[in-house]
Image 1 (tube, one colour):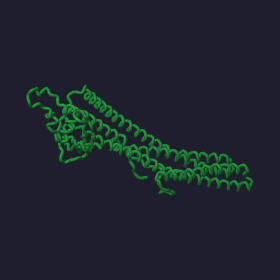
Image 2 (cartoon, helix red, strand yellow):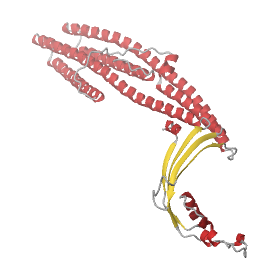
Image 3 (tube, rainbow, N blue to C red):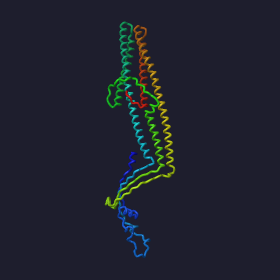
Image 4 (cartoon, rainbow, N blue to C red):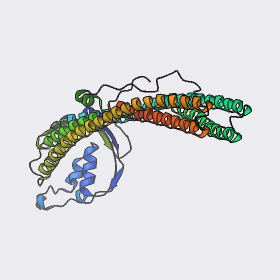
Length: 399
């Protein structure tokens, strides 16, 4: 829109008037090219010389009959130099458009973040379902052992009841996990705007992105917006400086007028062309105040940019630290899970020998399940932090 001002402005003006004002009527006739000496009152001029002609007030000049007037004109105004203001405003408009594109990019990145997270969430849930199914199989195997031992008189009914209660508990968790998987697929279908029933296998741990200060400042959308804002504030200062420079413009006008609308248009047409220079000398200090205001705004934006850089760098460092902490937790939980499974197997064997009770065996299985949940939660937390890092780095990447 600002660029269009470089091409000037073309206006068509059509008016209809009626007046008996002496100045207006005489002007109407002149503009219509119909003025006569009689309109000056020469018909009332005393040729005998008995009166002073300078003292005569002609009635036809001072009290004319009312007249219609229909002027039609086309005007064109072209700015030749505006003190640089038009150029700066055009540049500002372009940067504002770029800023709006960054806002759109940020919305797209948010959707990418949700989509990638949905993929990894599904992988985690499938991993959870797989481990729960193994636990259910272990419970079924344990129940078969109890039935066999009861036949031989080494187990009681209460042992089997405890196992069945545990199986019902784990089965409930398994069913809930299946529902969560279904919900995750529905959410992914919503994000992609198409039906998704299966996905290609992805690792349940997202890769860690590379982070450095230069990469962060070059790609982070908020920093890019702040840099654009700084450039806009610089241009705003230059635009305000333009108020202290002269303005130069050209204009042209073509038209015709008559007491009848569009009558004898080309017989009574006229044109005017010219140039104009305007240079404000004083306006009460308003331009000085606006320039200082723009300079202060520029300094504020520059400070905000530095704060944004530091704040985003701090956030990236915090997320990186949280990912590294989650990595440590995941390694620990993997070892704990491996140990818990070995302990469960040991207790199962000792139960067959009558050394421990079925309750002791199920307690060890509960510990295995607890560690499994902690491991999956740590992986989910790690993935979330990594996707936040990718958003900060403006990395779309692949799932």
